[in-house]
Length: 274
Image (tube, rainbow, N blue to C red; front, side, top):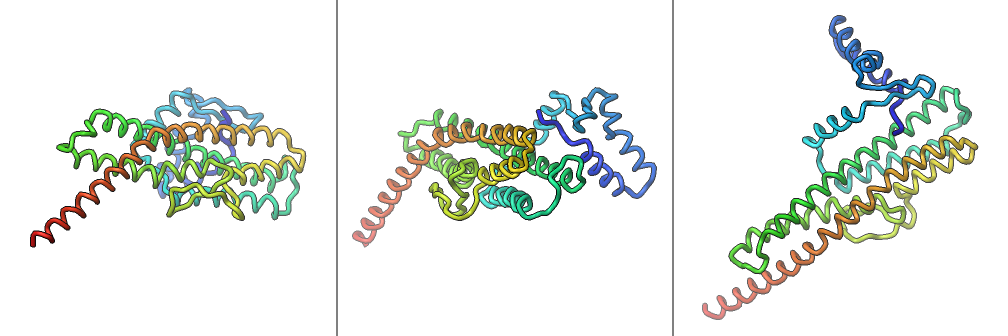
């Protein structure tokens, strides 16, 4: 676990505290959310030397469960936004002039910003993949409980298969593309197309890692490489989700084509009778 930056947390906490008008409210909020109080309440552990703190696993699990209520699947546009955030980090790494020396204020701020952004991307992808996996399991169970050969339940089956097609095209494939170094997210196509000019999400992270390597900051290279590896583990999960839903997308296509043919023949018959 990489933990969280003490400096960044205190900075963000100060912003929130100062947003309150009354002094008593500011003091009460700070006393409750300060790292010292969180440690006192056994909610976190502090590592002053590393400048990081670590939330207790049970607390992280509880927060994630609460988040599940408001999690929505990431769209192609949102995934592309995350990609552009990573590209922005890389662009800053190769254009900003500062001393790549730990302890330098500009360097420390940029390093913390990199970790904050990549962790945010990782958390977004992790939650997205987890939600898609749960939804895929649910839809698969629904379809497996239905008799797909029984035309009396055609409407019900058709609606479920449309839901599968929607989540497959709009969320599963774009997420899979996001996690593949060779591909870009395509908002209007479910096909995987190799990127030719633009930088992908994973290649942007690797380029950032290479920038630290060029300045012999090996510790940062190793830490960032670990984050990249954690992010890429989601690719295996979403690949399994794609495989599990793909059979139903093919079935949905076949049923739609069959229905269109039936409707076409019905119209021909009606026109012939009239």
